[in-house]
Length: 247
Image 1 (cartoon, helix red, strand yellow):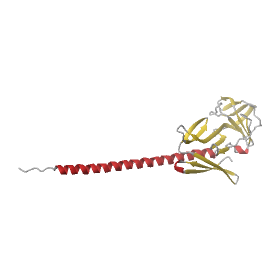
Image 2 (cartoon, helix red, strand yellow; image 1 turned 30 degrees about the horizontal axis):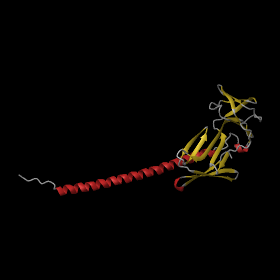
Image 3 (cartoon, one colour; image 1 turned 180 degrees about the vertical axis):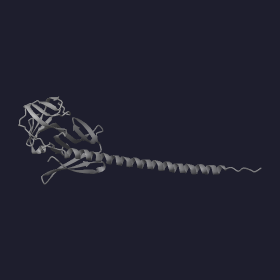
Image 4 (tube, helix red, strand yellow; image 1 turned 30 degrees about the vertical axis):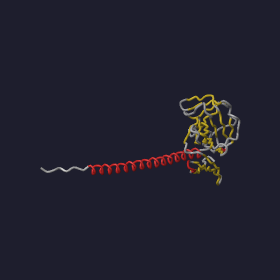
């Protein structure tokens, strides 16, 4: 009968030690790889968020002053809400509040069919009109901002009742649409950190990655440009240059 030889105690202990070392190295490698992955994921997400903000801001600024005929700054504007006539398509500030304010007609607009009375307009069907929001009436010379009493929808037309009468006389090439006032600004969020906010109807936090705004208006060959510098974490910046279409 052959004598079976097993592992000695010292061999077992050495094997266990080597296995422990290998497992420890693998765990350390896994933890380091996971940390690197999470850091890369964080950087990528931050990059995507900044590009998303870039797109939103650029699109908003580009549309500043839109009306179907001419840009808002090229028209004689009166605001019947407060009787101001210095309405600007694009208003910016760096101190003490960093903000960008965009004013324009909403893209869903309609052509004026008839002025039935100084306070009653008949226009092409405009289903999205909200009587709680201001209305912009504009041709190629004038524009008026009005508050509404009522919006009455018909089959192919919409009748609009204004709170105050029209000042100017409107004929052909007159359009009406919701008057949009968007505002981008920086303020402290609930965590007491500077963050980028957006206001239209209500205020919402866009991202906490943007801690500051620096805005500069530029003009080139009668075309208006806006350079926006976003202040990010770790003193990083992201620059946006946008041509204002309605200028």
